[in-house]
Image (cartoon, rainbow, N blue to C red; front, side, top):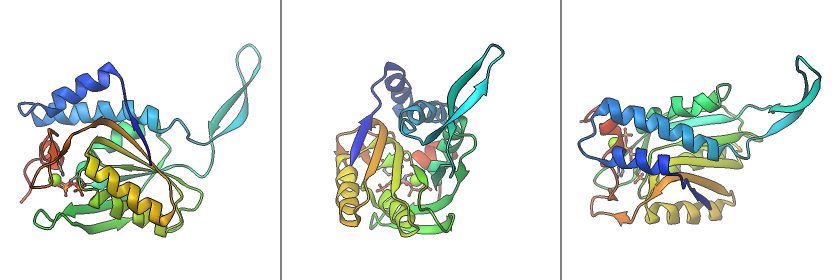
Length: 213
Ligand SMILES: O=P(O)(O)OC[C@H]1O[C@H](OP(=O)(O)OP(=O)(O)O)[C@H](O)[C@@H]1O
Ligand SMILES: O=c1cc[nH]c(=O)[nH]1
Ligand SMILES: [Mg+2]
C-alpha cells in the first residue's frame, strides 16, 4: 500500500487542535472539514483528466477536465460523514456512495448496517473517507465491498492511522490483488487495549456528533 502522510505545517496545526480534548464539537467539525480539503488535494493528484480546448478572451488554450466516469466518494458513516463536504469542495461533481459501519467495541469487528453503492464500479476511481484507521476492520470491510463491485482504483483518506490498521489493509489488499493508496494527516504510535488510537483524538464519531449509545 502506498501511504502518503501530508507533511504540511497547516495540517499539523489543525490536527493538533483536533486532538485536544478541550476542542468543542463545532470547532472539531470545522477543522475536520478543513483538513479533509487539504488531504483531498493530495488524494486527487492522480484523478483522471482528459484534454480539452478552451477559448480564453485572448486565444485558444489547451486544458483538462475531469474524465468520465466521475469519481466516487464513499464516506463510512457515521464519522466519515464529517469528511464529505471537505472532499466535495474539490470534487463537486463526484458521485457519492454510502456505507454505514459500526465497530463492535467488544470484538472490535466492523458491522455493516447500511450500504448504498453503485452496482458497477469497474473503471471508477473510488475515494473512501473515514477519519480513523485503527484495527483496520472497518476500512477493510469497506474496501472489500468496493472490490466485489469491480473497483480497482481505491484511495482511502483518513485523519489518523495506527500501524496495526495499515498492516491489516496491506495484508488483505495484497490477498485480493488490489493496490490501495492511503492519504493521512498523521501516523500514530499504536492501539490501546480497547482498540483506540494512541495518542489519537478519541472517538471521532462522538466528537463530531455527540456520544452514541
Ligand atoms: O479501524 P477500526 O478498528 O475498524 O476503527 C475505526 C472505525 O471506528 C470508528 O467508527 P465507529 O465504529 O466508532 O462508528 P461511528 O463512526 O458511528 O462512531 C471510525 O470512524 C472508524 O470507522
Ligand atoms: O481511536 C479510535 C479508534 C476507533 N474509532 C475512533 O473513533 N477512534
Ligand atoms: Mg465512533
